[in-house]
Length: 334
Ligand SMILES: C=CC1=C(C)c2cc3[nH]c(cc4nc(cc5[nH]c(cc1n2)c(C)c5CCC(=O)O)C(CCC(=O)O)=C4C)c(C)c3C=C
Ligand SMILES: [Fe+2]
Ligand SMILES: [Fe+2]
Image 1 (tube, protein in one colour):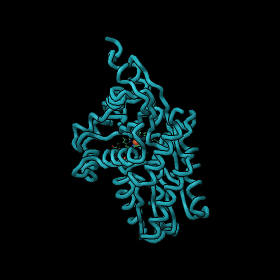
Image 2 (cartoon, rainbow, N blue to C red):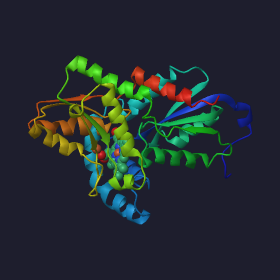
Image 3 (cartoon, helix red, strand yellow):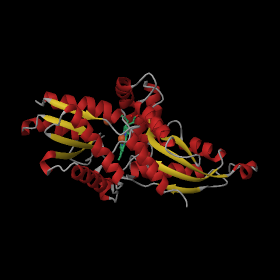
Image 4 (cartoon, rainbow, N blue to C red):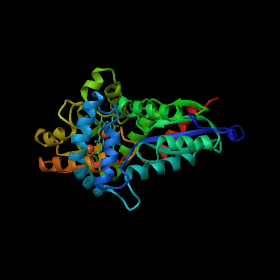
């Protein structure tokens, strides 16, 4: 049969709202074969690497997957916990904390854009629970085609298989929510109260190739607005904070200033203590724990820096769950 569905769907259908919290994904295990599968699925997404498909296949399957899987598996092993990948654990816990704030009219599931649990599988779970209204929240506060746009593609692809497509509210971004800015700002204040304050606050966002912005991706502008709002919330002067972009891949130009170059340069400019936060990541993961908390700390200290404090993501904190619940209520069909 071309479309999925059955007659009992009528009897099962109910007024419940299904919520899907969607994060990027993570390899199944921190070993080379899992990394190969994960990186191939992720990087073959045309939204992530914008190249003609044949060129992308040559680059990804022929080069990146082969070159990167081994090293990437080793870095994942450094952050892996006995319960699995931090990104997965933190996201599942955020889902549970969010569900606890909602009443029985809501059914919350967590999905991953790449790997498991897949968007298709989790949407079908909601369908079997009788849900006729779905709110999908990609867990990236700032919109980029490479993340939020790609998540939308996967939802559309899954619905293309269903006979009875539900109502869908897709949350394109949520960087403008006061509760988001306040949650990040307050987590920085709490960190300062406990550990003291450094000379500069560094806000590091995942980068994207510069040409994506030139082609109309609003990501950079949304990161800048978020960082400015967080700095305003903390009443910081312009020389007390800085926005940087991390995680670039390949030879082309990505958004600047680059995080790694900044960390290597700051001590020479007289900045020897920094607090670093990643406001664009909803859950701690490889990119925050290994790259920011580990690798960039090393660059900074090696360059003469003395104090480098990493401030964790919002993860399953009460303020983060409350933010999710607020977004869900705002997008619930009246
Ligand atoms: C061209 C490549 C990439 C683009 C564009 C990109 C955008 C992008 N990614 C995130 C969030 C995350 N990325 C993560 C890992 C990761 N990202 C890339 C490449 C691109 N990302 C790679 C190759 C990897 C894998 C890790 C590695 O081998 O280094 C993760 C962490 C996943 C985890 O399991 O912990 C997140 C989260 C955003 C927000 C973004 C654009 C805005
Ligand atoms: Fe990424
Ligand atoms: Fe990275």
